Amino acid sequence: MKFIFNDPTFSLQLLRTIGETYYKCADIGECISTAYHIKEGDFESWYEEWLKTSKRVHQYAEDCISKNHLTSAKEAYLRASNYYRVSGFLLIEPDDPRILTTLDLSKHCFKKATSLFTDLVESIQIPYEGTTLPGYFYHAAGRKETSQNSKQINQQKQQLGDNKNKDNGINGNTTTYPTLIVVGGFDSTLEELYASAAAAAVGRGYNCLTFEGPGQGEVIYKKNLPFRYDWEKVVTPILDFVISNQNDFNVDPKRIALMGISMGGYLAARSAAFESHLSACILYNGVYDSYDAIQTGFPKELLDAVNAGNSEFVNITLTNLMESDPNVKFNMKHGMRTTGTNSPYELIIRAKDFSVKDILKDIKIPTLVLDAEKEDSFPGQPKKVYDGLVSLPPESKKYILFTEEEGAEEHCQVGAYSITHQRVFDWLDEIFEDSS
Image (tube, rainbow, N blue to C red):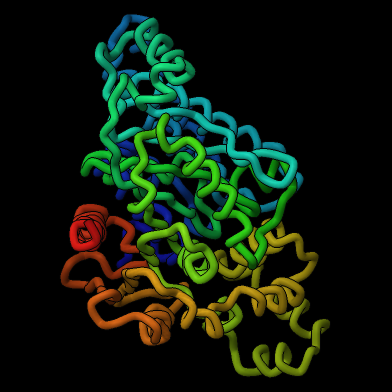
């Protein structure tokens, strides 16, 4: 799907951004107007034009809140948060200070927006190996008694520490709810997971926990913790946090699902193979082997060099290719930063660790695998994941291929949240209904 840009990286990222209009995290005219001003293939132009839009919409939010137009402010903060994320997306030099500036502005605007939500959203810090991981907990039961009022918001948050609510959940509610934990991917941020999953989950009566782990967002850029292949060691502390707070959060411990998006499809599958507290898993999309995926589209001589261990040839060839191919440039530069590797060759070899080939058989919980007809990041891999779920009976696993006719053929169905979330949550509703 070509959208304004011919370059596939620019086209996909624009579609990814404009798709968040479905949850009021973007607006069509703002996105198209910004895109028309961008010089195709120029990362600096991408940054500059999106930054202009971010600042303008951020100012809308500030003007609205100063006049107590709180719904308008909330919506503008959501859009500004997303646009700041997009503006910094193609800043790929690790020491570029603008990365942290745009990241912090995105987080600031999102936090301002959630403070104005009608439903209760908690900013959380999850204990993890001597530090913490940032996250949000979206409460299915946490509807504020009085919305759009900062005093009421503060009172609501204070109630979370009240002894009565520690025993009886939010506002004394003893009803428990299914809970979705969301794992982002190679380049997602905590705030983007609101549109990717949390908004749809809470709208259907689910609690939702989103977080940034090693290799993602502020965890890589501020704490310098790179991606790790053994992601179960990340998810287990998340589950411990949820279960230890199950009364506060109104969590049904028998209905906890894990969703992994994009590369998160690997991270979630890996976790599901080791973690016994999960009840269901959604791989959005399925990732079978990152080493195979990272070589997709490489010319034969480059593949031969990788397989022969000729690191010098691989590094020179990919460095040259980065000059002409924005997709290769982004994936190599971002990949090296987030995995802690120092060269394209090291990045490719590190990808060998990120494989579920040998552990899919250990997944014993109902699993949904999504695929896209024009999937280009992990082509053919979701079906391999589905076929590898050999320990699951047919009724406990499902494979869905999204098509071009549905307008959902791109990687992770960008631009098609409505049909994607319909199918994901309808499946999950049925799984949890059958298990109750």
